[in-house]
Image 1 (tube, rainbow, N blue to C red):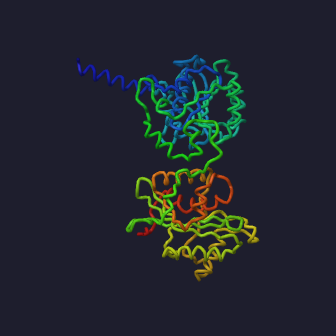
Image 2 (cartoon, helix red, strand yellow):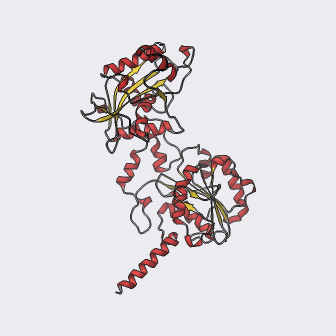
Image 3 (cartoon, rainbow, N blue to C red):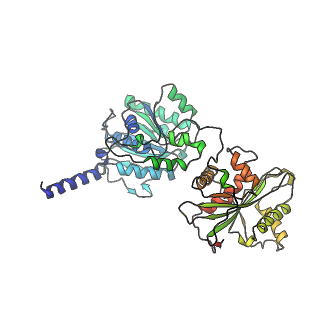
Length: 463
């Protein structure tokens, strides 16, 4: 065999693959089922990391080319849209799109910057044949569809019902070959109306649970092993796994959140001597008597998986108490552990709350003033600040996921003294009841130490 000829052939194939990646693509069974479906409205509904977005990008590119290997599509030039929830989420999707685009068929006006996406306020991928692929987000409201004529829309998330109505009506102008394709995991928005449309036969549904079979391309090797899938599963809360792993329409509404919390985690274990840890206090300001909670934690991020030691808790008990009583209780909790307020690296408290028994609002500032009086320092001279906990959308779920993952990896320990927290971990189900206050305090105290961008305080405690 002529090795130089073979090398030239391989180089030619490599260059061709870089120019036309989809000519060399191999698809998994769920991806193929979606791509081969000629239905006007179709859905690839599956778990995370099953390859939904890749199939969507391939569909959009082929439609822009006017040539689809599996179904008949409108001839070029045409206009298609890619819809996602937000600009931040679209950046990862734009990267996947760039990877499958035929680079030799792009118009010179198409510019892509890694990490920043395609050029333009409304990013556009322009083709030499005149086709346009516009990338939009549902944060843009109606998306400006009233005056648009588009042949196909790819939606990479559960859309608002109003947006679906506008888009599905708009593609009807494209005739029988136009349509809407959804690739999604049914989380983030109510999806009952989509499920109804599937059951009525309006939308063709292609389920894609996250299994080894469903991530194995035709004639290829699995993209994920069973062990890797199990690791993905461990990162989700038990109540959410049916949707995020299997793509099911609804997750269970019963069952405790912290399934990984085990009796053996209730122990007197402390951080090993000499280990560098950070100390945090999380405080929840409930409105009712007995719902004011402070949790003292030690956190170690030096391992592959973080570890949390819950050292102590303070609860207000069943009687209404004033801020000074809370301050005394928190300081007493520190003294029990041989600490002072100087020992704490981070204080995090809930947003101020209108406590009925106080005749005003209980919050971080009011508690700080009480701590000043108990410590004996002047007004405004407290040597630390109780900062408001960061609570963006989804923070409760994310925080509980992080806590649950620590438990899964045997990195979670609770002192038996923390009776209210222990009971809460055994029964919390995302319901706003007596169990949420201790869980919230734990999230504020521990999770923000774990997720902080800079884990480099001025000094670390040597336990």
